[in-house]
Length: 119
Image 1 (cartoon, rainbow, N blue to C red):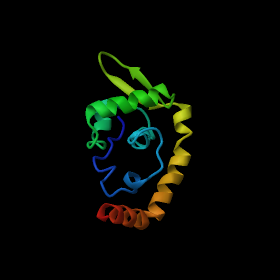
Image 2: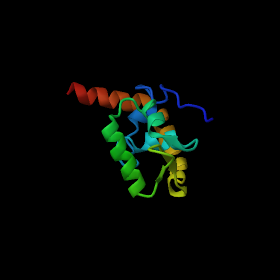
Image 3: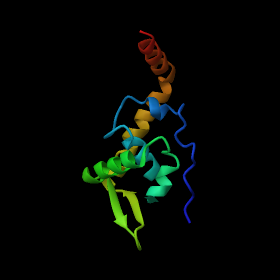
Image 4: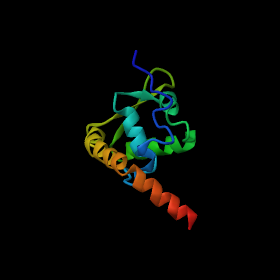
């Protein structure tokens, strides 16, 4: 039995949500991060990605699969599992670098967004 993903894995104040560097679509990097520890079913991904509608999550997963970053495997019955491919795993290091950068520039990113919204 694998460890469940924490529901607060991507808190709204998580630096990953401020990261201006995109890997695929808006949610791709968060999905990749969820799959970092191994295969996950759609329902498992929904927990930490609760801000993503099921339709958008499905579209993001299909795009990641199309790009060769994720493999979709149909298990017994209608159960489906998603896994990072070797190509998808190769994104983990640049993703870590982007997250580190966002953490280091957290205050500057927040200030820029707040000043932009105020204008």
